[in-house]
Amino acid sequence: YVERDGHMNISVYNIIGQKVAELFNGYQSIGLQKLIWDAHNLSSGIYYLQMHLNGQFENYKAVLLK
Image: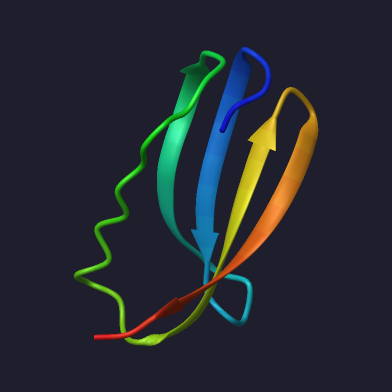
């Protein structure tokens, strides 16, 4: 759920900190949003999603199983 309108960037990083994907980069309005991560070219493992919105950021941990 996006609590404020603004510029948003969501990127995915592998366990050693390399950026492996950019899921979204642009303006996002308030409300419930849906995002699909196409990870067909990545191997199973732990990844970190970092979301930037109006100068603030949040980190999420994801486990990819194939």
